[in-house]
Image (cartoon, rainbow, N blue to C red; front, side):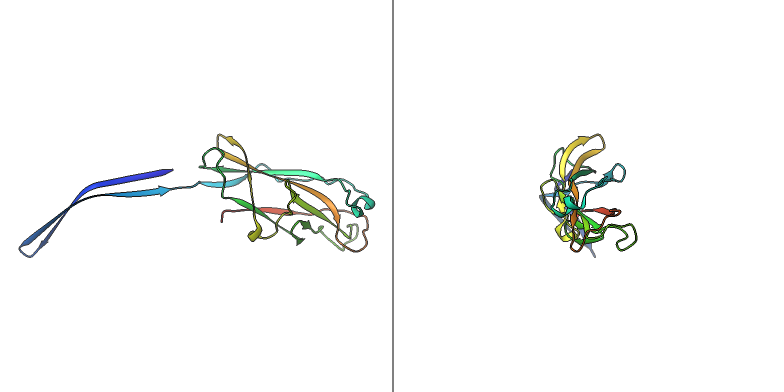
Length: 179
């Protein structure tokens, strides 16, 4: 949204004691208030990625099944298809970018020697630090604003040490970064 105000002429009267001074001027003043966008928010419920069961051999040789996932963010106050200045990064028990630790590691019934590898749809490791936030891709326009989508893939991957079978759950959150 742009708001522009112009003033083309002005007069100033000064009265000091018995003397009066009048100054007349002419010019243009332009005031621009350029609001980029109103804000962004997550759309929909939490994403639950069903990893399924995998064999230890598939995990060891890197052929565990990749599971696609995505989430949408709605930004209001943008022009259709505008490149949004909003990025995302992730938080969770991470061993570094692109690798999420399993929940309850070391407890009975939980797998060991394995984590969850996470990449975006372009193959880049998901960042677990605000400094490496990644941009969202425009998906479509909706009545309430523009929809931007993040698409990624998750799969079990070895983390070192002996791989033992068990539960392989993990949790992460995404953070919308406006900087």
